[in-house]
Length: 365
Length: 256
Image (cartoon, rainbow over all chains, first blue to last red; front, side, top):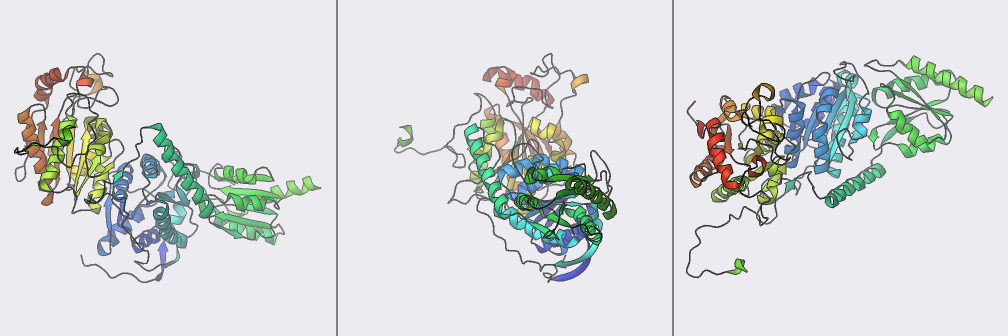
């Protein structure tokens, strides 16, 4: 197949999953390994159409278990690599992610979150927050977790994800959801080939005579050595926590109530903030764009002046634990959630906020 | 020191390949792993491909294969060596890639990865060490354990109705169109070692042709796991393993 020339910067109307796949090609992805699962199969489908005409390689694996281990191999060989899946498939990848984190291999993993537990539903959910931010697999490790809230961010976070993965030599997760994957929006795509790439010196590409063998492993049988490896990982996570926190604020300057939400929930809460302000309730939104590292410092600052926090998620209350840790008892933290693939409406969140407001006002009087 | 011994007027006709490190093998006395490691590394040296070869180590007794093989290597999760090798080979199609896996790794937990890697005809070599037992974890039953074989998890013998039958992975993968060269060898006698080395050489040479997967089973022994002396284990291998796992080529290039 004749190769198409590199694509310039373009503005297009695209599905979230397709924008993400297109961004991966533009970001110079060398290889994609994945397995079909709703609601993210468009990523694999899009890549099987585009990659042969453009650059890189794409392979449909026999399972998510195989896919994440192909990622391990190709990343270890120095490639810029990506896989994507949805919740049940991401569960299958946890073993591989633990190995990848320990062996310090850069890669980008995308979870288009659907409702669980179990086979669950194909509708959007945020039920994988714990799995994404607290490790997920065995051992002490973290993923850098990026939480897009638009098709634009589905594309942009691919570039950011590769940069972070290579900067910190580790796995980066984009945690989206079924709605973000399926919705169509305008997206401003970066020019293809604009992300620089170098072949890492540690990659296993054949040992040249002037060096010792490169070994990719997560096995350090002496506990003294394994503790050193753990300390190195923790030191890295500390630097990430200091340098890579990203969040967006909306009307938080004078807000009595800080609503905290990420991804799709944050889009809905933004509307709630507008509705609340129309009714004279001073609400504001803090939207974490990174879930690990978490914007704990900013939340602690906001907690000094806020009357209360309301955390909104499409789950039973997961990120709310991190919000409470950050608020550290300075003020009350409430939670509003819907589960199992149900998306909350701005109005029902507003009702919750009004109930909280009544309670706080009554208490103050 | 012996290392400094100068043998004047004598020709070196046999030496440790430079593709093996100085680390002494941790394998039990009489175990076939050391011979298999050495044969692979001798072939890599003789072909002059140490700069173009990437090996994938498994989980099992040979988990530390990369301590001994002086080439770039990756250590895979249990059973995932074929998937890892696929990732490496797809990214670096001009390089030589091989996996080195035991029976638990390749034929139990990694069955899916093994079959699909061969079915895709990945252009790499799979070296499968079959000693009919889980050596590293202390002699538990393997998928390739023989009927009535006593192991630490089949203390009354492998009873096939409850525990399944010995799995002939090599015959199984030979049926797949992606398999290019499939053979079963052993390392228990000098003659078997010579034949095995030839098969390993073929598995590397065929990668140049890019025709499919090369699969070399090496029937081996496990004196510790089998609770036998090294010598008795060789006898047990001949009398019990070889009738079930017959040596020889199963699929040759151009002959289906």
